Image 1 (spheres, rainbow, N blue to C red):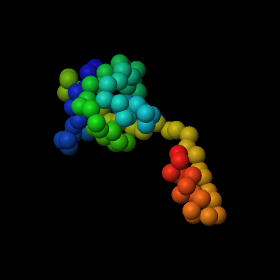
Image 2 (tube, rainbow, N blue to C red):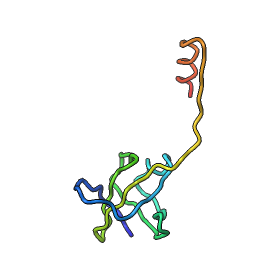
Image 3 (cartoon, rainbow, N blue to C red):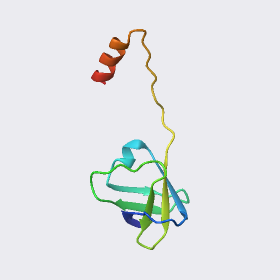
Length: 90
């Protein structure tokens, strides 16, 4: 299935794709739907697919984008200034 447009209507999605953040930033991507079917994204450049975004396949099917579970880091510091400096350098 090929996808070139986002969907702005009110229809319910019939398919689901789960993507990591790095993949949701890409405008060109080859991946698979949850059901195993191949999916090719060819979206306009410059956007990020958010969790829950809807896409429309060339065949008219609506696809929901789910964010994949990913590991995150948690950083804490007693001094807010040191925390801000560390965040700036990341």
